[in-house]
Length: 457
Ligand SMILES: [Mg+2]
Image (cartoon, rainbow, N blue to C red; front, top):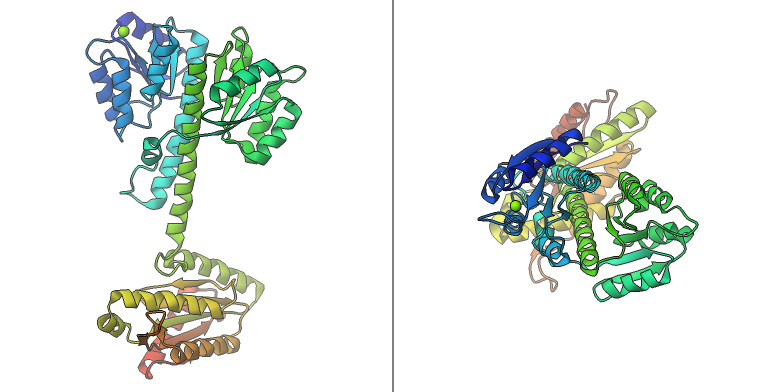
């Protein structure tokens, strides 16, 4: 796991020092000595993570951060603010500017590597999800994480695993007015509660009495339902080795005791934001998958998806020596429907026809809109003679009930369909099957339409 880290500092010795430490951990390092230079490098895609000094002439670190987070090309880059001023208000400023994390000068080596590693992990996950979302939806899609970044900060449901009542109370009072916090003092119950309630964030004390909190971390990460759940650890200042171990086990971030209220609020907000990006990407991906498989107008499978089903079903039928029929339907004189009643009416007919076809079939029979007004239906385990009866019923149903444009039935459009039928034959060849079915449909058309033809080939 490595990344290209951009270090921005106006003081050369600082650049050098950070560079040496990051190189020792096998990160690639790019450096810039001004805010303007940093913005250019980021826009050109020269880095994965940004380490940003606050005090710089011209553009200060907060301004650079704000600009990075406002630009769709750079808003997804994790930003770590490096500040010499150990002031909580200053840290808050950085997080308000959209920074993902901050470090205090002089930079502590362990904290530096831990934060950079954790942000690298986040960047890799986001990049992967984004690439998938974009490849599914095709090029030209808006950046799938841009929209959630611009939204208001989310309220979160937080599970606090803490067995010290005083500490738990203070955290609830720090977060309770913005978030819904529930306390779980029994670590043995925490995993079940997390898996059951699916909170947006877990805040976990690393120093629980008689229980190894790191073990809970690893359990959370190995359970499917809780794997992606963000975990924020509470730790004592001198518990550094456990913090590092926790970060390795997948803890997303940590806050040192005594807990600074502003820092806690800011880190909770950052974790909730990240979770929202990831959730948004997942939804986006789900939509993209559906878009790739489904015809938007009719809700039936699209051609690409159907062809995949056809190959698989045909293969199975051929191997198992089972019957398989294919039906191709075409609406007669559909162009006249569009010309006479308009395209909206045409769409309405397509939609309603799809619905009626579905109603006549078994739920498991694959149906697709194959082209403009052409539909394909796969009938597994159905011999040709049975398929012919189904087709005839379909033809008769469509003919006998005109399509009504309005609920009052003011305008009814008479529609008929032509159907071609074929079975899988002896060879498991999808192209040949499609060709035979198409020829049967053509025969129905030339014989006067509104009829069913069974392939004799
Ligand atoms: Mg400086």
